[in-house]
Amino acid sequence: MEKCNYFLIFLIILNLVNLSCGSWLNTMSKFTRG
Image (cartoon, rainbow, N blue to C red; front, side, top):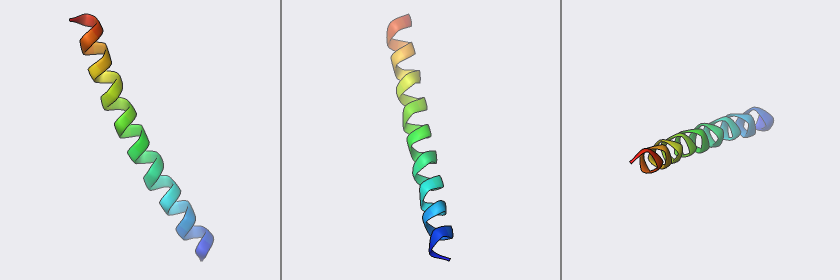
């Protein structure tokens, strides 16, 4: 049961990192284009 909870937390953190990385890449591409 605890392993399942850890896995869920890991997935959530991975999602957050993915979102922040995506937005960061978007802003960087905007800066390089501009």
